[in-house]
Image 1: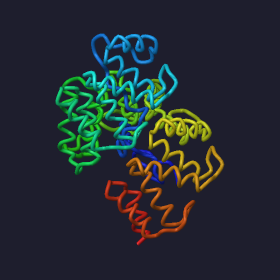
Image 2 (image 1 turned 90 degrees about the vertical axis):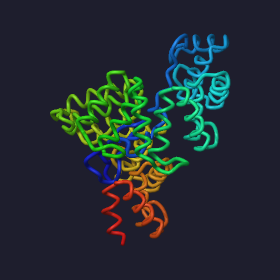
Image 3 (image 1 turned 30 degrees about the vertical axis):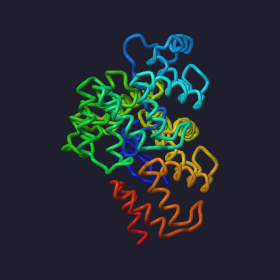
Image 4 (image 1 turned 45 degrees about the vertical axis):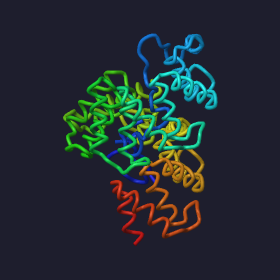
Length: 367
């Protein structure tokens, strides 16, 4: 099953993150603001808070009861930035920050509950904490709350409400809100489809140094959409910058460049697999899905259909629509897993309902 690209759905490698939203994500949000762990930036604290990656400075300020610094230090332990990754310590610090009045701490703590990082997944708690932060005008919290409504995590899907929350955040200068709103304009959910508007929002967020948005800008250059001239070389530059900035969705897009040989870069399946593996290790489900496609075909890795199916299942379990489509087909056909035609049909129908055209085509074959 080939990897997927925004306009080229073969076995699926796309998610928002399609547009990389942290989903969801063009490669987008299809799945996730998706949001892949490492793709999701911490809520940035203003004022006297320390700098991301400054372990000594953040520790000193947190010890002095600067709660926003405690929040940032906690996030550093979540992603392993400047410190050794330690989810248990992250929980303690984020809990301290949230209890101490840091809305940033509450947002990042809610994120761990949304995705089950160091704690059991609890989407209801995530929803409540995001709303609490948004009500305090924490715009990153509003962006994350929008994601809850967009993906229907513990609540019915409500794209209009999601768009309103993203706009609120974007109007206040929050890059994630601009990026996510751009995705909705790109696909026409909750707002009228407008690719030019989508590009302008992605560019706005990229100019604010949001790596995920820069990855989406690169995607538009790769595809020549939104009023921009197709330029794969420029797209690669945006992907590389995004990946270097630890925007994991950018690494996924860069992996796709190496897989397909785009923008003047020679095909390198081993490099593609390495980038997808890095993304998957950081909870970017599009990376897991795309890595699964390489294992399914034996490109850059030893062919292993059981491993491929396991990676598709991991992506699907985290709401990646492409992973669900691929898992559905493997389940229906008994590839790397026992045959279960009813379950396979159910997964294909589920992915098709979420606008995965490849899954729709396969669902027809499975009738």
